[in-house]
Length: 336
Image (cartoon, rainbow, N blue to C red; front, side):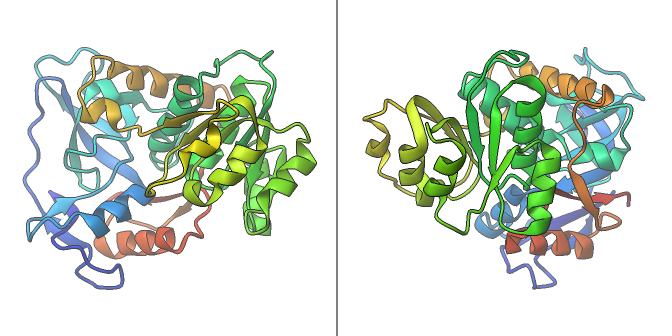
């Protein structure tokens, strides 16, 4: 089968950083679906793995967002049948989705929204799971609790995760959403996703947030720059507020949060699959709920740019754009 892989950690401008390969079609395990991949989306985790995990010459397939059709199932599969259209983010410790056929545990797969194309659906799984788990599991918000008021600050609100955080907060809570953005096009996209107030992350953040929420904010969803902004979060968060972070950084002065009893949470949507937790199927239910909200017109895809067919050249371009830090929404690729 055709696939895109890398054999050595190289700069994205190197033609060997991602290469077209042919690999055997994977065999599904007992709880696995074998999916014919129709579209994929690209996330920062893709280039971070490529940069930092050298496979030593063996082809390693990246990719953690896909939509496609089930073509075979394992002996113990209960949730899906051959012919079902699905979308999912996969597991970081298994081969990725940048291949024509992909094996994935059914418990982390959802039914594709019927109102979306494969391309539009492929943009949603990883960011939807990250946003949902961060808001409703880590921060302890209650989905559907429309009487739950307060203020949420989300960084990089025009990014893939930030846009889904804004949409879910708008749809399922009564929180006022403050989002950070710095360009006219990112500001417009963030507002379209559900952000009520936009502040510029290139300027001093605390005074801008205070101008919008003089009493401070109740929750922060930090998608990037947590280490740089921790003192700001400690300043603008109310006592007993909550901070959830998804980015990577070194040691920080966590004691800044103590005087206000601010809770700090990590969110990694791969935790359930990576550690084979007993509740892996929660992600199946989250994705199905997202699909229902999409089909009801409450949530929308965050796909903004489709770079064409799934091949090494187009994936290198996707990585290049993401590494620049200037992507808006999600980058997708469609077909082989």
